[in-house]
Length: 370
Ligand SMILES: *Cc1c(COP(=O)(O)O)cnc(C)c1O
Image (cartoon, rainbow, N blue to C red; front, side, top):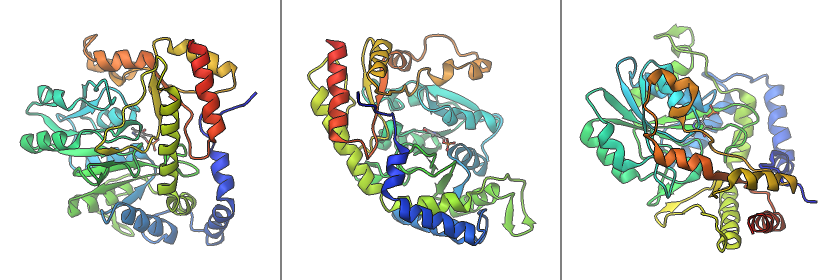
């Protein structure tokens, strides 16, 4: 029997072990553990990721949930304000809004892309609306032209949640460089992942970018000069060193993910499965490969018996989570997200998965469904 994990971080580590071990050793050697003003490992990663973003500014922080919160705070969004977020995402996208005292206003997703339905945005805008957080879910960009246009005509800030879209493009433009700000997570399983929690942000307005950096580091402008009350959200040296090594491989790994996705699409295209739609004007980086099937739970169980791990991203629309009961959202107003959550299944996808393994997953799926 073949055992196929959902992701295989060890396989990736083994492919770059010598460089990673040396990078970590150097950090320990220099006791350069914590970021802040002068950690050369953190500075190096920030510079290199800024280059990756084709020159957009970039600062690191502790994780991709903090980065969203820090951005919202830097823009002075808070109590009384509303922020539009998709009904389907990882909880952070909405949690950050609640945590700063503003109100998350959920918008249903689109059937074909699972991303926020830009056609519903204007129905949710009122005088309190301050921002939109489009999430480039699963690794494909949202419909940014429309989102940016609606934001502009309503005076809203656009914060791209790029936690799943490192390197993805929309009409040739990199995700994370289109909005007023963008947030990145480098959680281990993301397309660019650290060996612990890590995150960062880019903000177009230089003054707000400076403020966000201060918020992430106890409100310090310089060492011991605290100009506001911030928080402790620094990237540590080991994570920065790991990310700096891995960043060099990101484009190659994204290329491999696309190749694997295309294999899945080839092998599965004759079955009763709804395959992910990759738009011609988007460069998808397949953080996740999400199919849709009617008998999802049965399929997942049968695959598990064959040694194949799958996952669900996500089983519940965010507005239906107990955590958001306090918003008293009426039942049934996110039909597309609700329906999707019953049918979506994420198949194993990572740069190191082999062609025979992909073939085995596909054969198994076709067998189970027949
Ligand atoms: C992973 C993720 C986050 C949060 O990142 P952390 O680094 O785990 O805090 C935010 N948004 C989305 C869409 C994510 O997938």
